[in-house]
Length: 412
Image 1 (tube, rainbow, N blue to C red):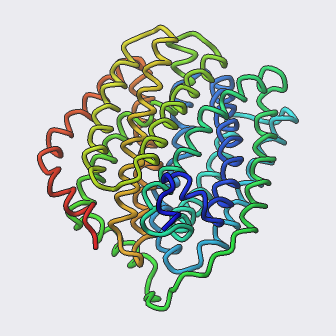
Image 2: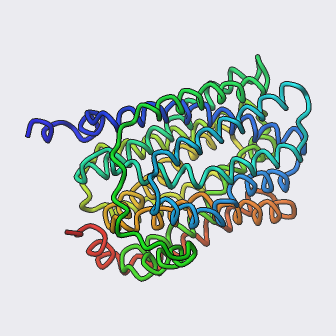
């Protein structure tokens, strides 16, 4: 009873396994964003092309489209804890190769593309395992806060990581950011060895064809009266506005003329806003009303993106970047919490893999398409059109909000 009187965030952190899990991931998130900023700027330095920025973003994101459903189905069959340990070891090796090739002066845009693909292949298994582990570390009542706090940790490091990178890269070069990620990945892998979770009950799992499990998960999600419309929202936000974050090097270099430090400012602004959005959801705690909150976040994402692309002033762009980060993370974290609550346990890996496929995978198409369009019309016009499309979709989804909330927020 005493635990229930704690604020939602402190209640989550009072659970041993959750605290260890998030503590280990924190260092991985921070240095991972350092590596991402370094890789984005390195891609721009090596190519100077928005098309190559789109290709590198696609290399990072596209494997999710193919592998996330398979990773989700596999996670529903196995113990996710050994799976995430193995995936984290793979990401550590990738980080070490990034650091080695850059430090030795061997890096080319083609090698960067290949190493980015490697991380993209590993990430779906890491992410689906993580999504399955989080609910196992807390009671069901703490799902929304636990998920939001994990998102706050990730997105706070979108502020912390780039801010550190802004100091590290000018002194030690891009290789310094990559070496930092080797250290962060090692800390995370060590923390994962201290987790003590009972293996999930897989006695009712049908050992049929893996692709049949994938198809079953997709049918379940898109036949669900609450999951289907929020997934449509997530698809269009991920295709139209979400790629903006991956194209920030182009905005820093080609629109704001601010160089690597401008890129760090912009990336940090997105991260600060996203962290604030996730902390808001985590502090909110309750699931009631979260459907409406997710739709408001969707609306705010599109409007803030239109403001961002309408200016060529870096500081104004930073302000709108904070707004975009806040709105898109309020939307995505709300959707993630609603899905975790509404889904049956036996389908969790597959349904949450679908969330990851959309939120991390579909921006690959958006980044590539907008990168190609930007070669002819510029980044600002291209993203203005994309954000307008995002707004148009809300007209079709909004009338069904009450039915969505009933299906998502009232599971027994």
